[in-house]
Every structure is written in C-alpha cells, then in structure tokens.
Length: 366
Image 1 (cartoon, rainbow, N blue to C red):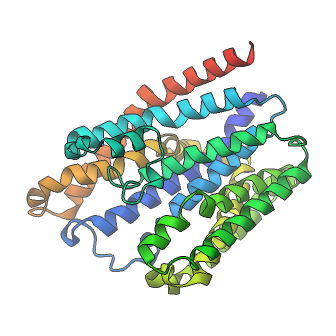
Image 2: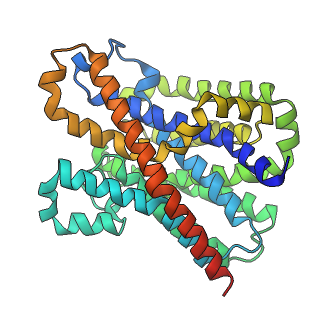
C-alpha cells in the first residue's frame, strides 16, 4: 500500500468524527428549535441536548489538523493562509448569501453586519455572531485561529517536540484563566457566553489538538495495535465528561468553576478521541468508508453550515407540516441538507481546495 493511500486511510477516522460532530450539532438544533409536533417525543434527551459539544469537537479536530500542518519543516505562512482561506471561505460565502437573499434579506440594510461577516470578525460584535446563521460565529473564530496559528511559523524551534508541549500547556492554561477572569467582569449569562466563547476562551480546545499531534508520534504504534482497548478508553472518557456535565446543563453559565473546567474536560475527552481515531488501523478505516460515514464526514462542513438555513426556510411551511407526522418534516429537512451539502462539497469545496493547493504550491516555488 502506497504512502498516499495510507495517509488517506488514517484520515478516515477523523472524517468519521467530523460526521459525528456535524450530526450532533444538527440534532441539537433540530430538537431545541423545532415545534414539539415536528420532532419525536424524546423528552429532555440529555445526549441530544448537549449537542453543542460538537462545536468543541470540531475545534479540537481543527487544532489537530493545524498542529499537523505547522509541524511540516517547509511550511510557510503565505501558503498556509492561502490553503486555509480557500478551504473555509468559499462555502462560507455561499451559505452566507443564501441565508441573506432567501431567509433574511432585511439584513442587507445593516452594512456593518454584512461587512463584519465578509471580513469574518462578526463573532466579535455583540448580537452579530449568529444573527444571519446561528453557527457562523464559529467560522469567524476558526479563521482568527488560523491567523494566530500562522504566527507560529515565525517562531524558532517549532519542529521540536518540547516547543509544542510548552505551547499546548500555555494555550490550555491561559484559556482557562481567561474564562475564570471573565467572572470578575460580569455575571450576566448572555455576556458571559459572548465573552468566554471568544477565541481566548476557546484556545485550550485548539491547544489539546496540538498536544494530541505530539502524543501521536509516541503512541501511534501502540494505539493502532491495541485499538479496541484505546477506543473503549476514549468512549469511557467522553462518557465521564458527559456525566460530569449532566447536573450543570441548566445552569452551566452561572457557576465559575463549571465555565472554567467545562472546556478543560471536553478538550481532554475529545482530544483523546481524536488521537485514537487518527491511529485507527486500516481494517477500521475500510469499514468506516464502506459504511458511508466517511462521506458524511467529507460533507460535514456543508451539513454544519446549511442545517439552520433550511430550518429557517421551512419555518414558513410549518402549518403544512403540522398536519402530518413529524417524520415528513424530518425526512424533507435531512434530504435538503444532504443534497445541498453534497453540491457544496463537489461544486464549491473541492474545486476551491484544489485552487488553494495550486496557488500555495505556486507561491512556494517562487
């Protein structure tokens, strides 16, 4: 088996986690925002109700990916930023204008809102982060992380393991201290959410992704050989985190210790999960590919971007859906999300990823 195929196989486990994260966030919003008649009678299902943790998992995955890229000996800042820009911005722009033109055209009068979204600093503006689409605040944060991560390429000794261990500890610690310190400014839960979910408060999630990259260098052979054992440990770790979270769901933002520790624990659980799946043996990767879960992971960015768009779109048709069983609404919603996400993947994401790679290579050859 050639090296490129092995690399593809290794990424299959991460595609599975992307699929899981996207579906988790979708189900959270579906259950949280849909009328009771248009969703199954799950009651207050805890595991669906904490689907916002899918965002944390996405950030850990991003930290792992970016940490892997930045460890490359010949990586340079221009090539890095070009590839990252073409990876997330084109699809983001398509969905942004779909939301504006179809669901919320009245926002075109708000020039600052539009400009902040186009330049991806909308997450820094109170009330703007999720105004057009409730998940877009995370994309602003993601791109700001890319800009910050690019600065690492200027630092000496970045190819040393000790550098990455030290940087990871700094990011995790400073992020936790930032969240702790916000309570000294305000106790208003809306403001707390806005401030603690800014990039400084989330850097620990990217940091544990960096840490997982370095641990993988030491433990990959053992994790692959004893994959079932480590998979069980990682699932138990996520379970323990969720059990810790359970009594705090209703008052998460009211307790300083919870806000401080919540993303420390989620980062620890999810980074171990990412580490394990990044070391999955070929047999597991092949099984994931045959199941179709890897493809869902490939279109997960589109799923993440479009699911709230279609929920907003179908809201005007609720009187019709309320006359039928909830499964009709759910099937139509999932079908629209799946088709649109696939189209975005094949017609927008892949072509622009290739363009980014071409421009990056051209820049590197200058």
